[in-house]
Each structure stands twice: as C-alpha cells, then as structure tokens.
Image 1 (cartoon, one colour):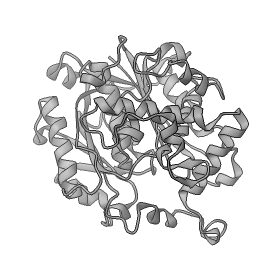
Image 2 (cartoon, rainbow, N blue to C red):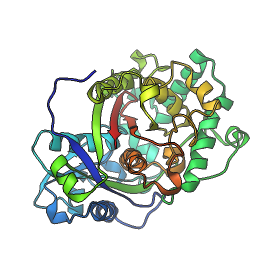
Image 3 (tube, helix red, strand yellow):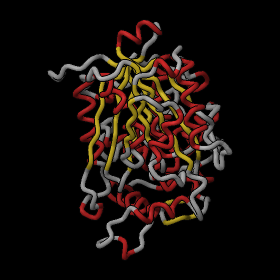
Length: 390
C-alpha cells in the first residue's frame, strides 16, 4: 500500500564511523569531524558543498557540555543551517530521519547527518547521568536507575512468553561473534551461552554480558536529493520509509512485555515503503540491542516475528548472518559498542553498506535489496525506524 504523500526521493551516498571505544582521547568535536570527513570522502564531496547539518546527541551531561548541538556544530556546521534532534536512545536513527525530511521537503540538497557521544567522562558511571530523567513527583522518590527498569521489562517479556535466559543469551553470542568481522567494534568475542549465564548479575535477570558496553564514538552520513545522488554515484541507497512514535512516558502504565511504540513507528515506515509483509519483504535488519533481550523484543515490535516467537526463530538460525533475515550483522550495540546516539546511526550505516555491497567481512551471504535500522530510547517508550532499498 502506497501513501498519497508527495516527497522528493532521498538517497544516502556516503557514510563514516570512528572506532567505538571506552575513554577515547579525541574531543567530541574531533570525533564528530573524523566521522564527517570519512562520510564526505566516500560521497566525493567537500564540507563547502553541504547545505544543511543535522546533529544528534543524547543528554548533554555525557560530554559535560551544555548546548551540545552548538558545540558539535564546529564539526561542520559553522555558517550553515544546523539543527539538533534528541529523542534519547532513539536519536541515532532520528538523525537520518531528520536529514531525510530536510531533503524530501525540498529545503536542502545535501545534508551532513552527524551523531556523537562520549559516555566515558561521566562520573562515577554513565548511569549517574540518568538519575535526572525521572518524574520528580512519582518516580524520583524511589531513586530508580535504568538497569532496574530494564530488568523489570526483561523479566516481564520472559514471563509472558515463557522464554528462558538461555534462549535470550543466544543474541549476545550471535552479535558479539558478528562483531569479530567489524573493524570498528569494541566488544567482539567468541562466547558461549554459559559465558553469558555465568557473568556478573547486575539486577536479576540482567547480567553483565547481557548488556552493551560504555563507549565513545561518532558516526556520519551524507544524504542528498536524487539529482545530486545520480551525479555522484552509480550505487545510491534510497531512504524509502521513515517512522517514529512515542508511547506513554509513564512506564508503569504500560505492559512492558511488548514494544507498542515500535509497532506504531514500524507501521508508519512500512506504509511509506509499501511493505505489507515485513518477514517476506525485508532482507536484513539492525534492531536496537543495548541488551540481548531487546533485539528479540524489537524484532517482534517490528512484526518480523509474531509475539513470543523471536527466540524460536533465533534458535533456528533465521537471524544468523547466513540466515533468512540476518539481524545485527554489524555486531550490534552488544558487539560494536554503545555511544548512544552514534550507535543508532552506526546501525543505519550498517544497512547502507549492506545494500551498497561494501560491508566487507560483515556482508551477509544472501542478495539484499531492502534493509531496516531501528533505535529506541527515552523512558523505553520512543522508537525510530528507517527502511532503505538499493
């Protein structure tokens, strides 16, 4: 089903990443520029060719700089039209979505989309930054932290669908193994299910190897109109569908076993891309996986698996790099790292490289024509989706 909305066609023609690591020595501006320069080089453009810049970054406190959009604008936005988007962990995919509507609307021809995060400087731990996100009346008196909330969501997902820890641990094993092929990865490893199950318990049922690491890093893309894309490359990758949605911020009012916010965002992107059966029409996916259970949770929210069926398909190899729908061939956040905003854009870049056929050792084994990247954040109720085709 196609919508009757009329947008200009929008393409990706370049992308760049920095290494994802803890305690990077580069400043946030230097990381943002390093990724931007790589994206411009791949696109065959200079900074002076760019009309507009879209910047994405999570809470200012991570880099210790207030008004981080303006601060990071030194990576390429000086004397240009610059905007910053922020939807928590969903920011990394909101950045290319924002760049898309800058171009699709006719406002800009060539947009540089940048996402950056340095989590290492937060003291004593990045978790301390999140103590300021809670409702001051109903939640703050309980002094919660995010791991508690994720533990409740993971437990609810396991309980409703009768899923074991062993089944969920297979996601961590797969993604960290995939990351062995990714030269930017921070946490690649050959692990077993027993390794995951024997790792330190953080808040039951969340264990250390169920989670992505603390990371610094940056990512960038060059997104253009069709006319510009055809002048600069024979292999543009088209942004065919975008979607974003926000559910109730009062997480205690939602049943945490199913990501309803993601279903809404996915339906918006699928309508735009003309996708009616995502399981049959999407070739490769990068669902957001800061925790191993979230990849399964999100695959179900994307309606690629029925509710509660994602662990069964994972066990059958459907989501392996040589499976029917390879999932997180980059290694995901679990294997590559989680500099929050940059991690979501990294997933979009992974799909771009897969569709362009330049993913190197990460390239999936089957021919791919349609791919999807997704991110998630805020108080577990925001999601962003982008569908691309070659």
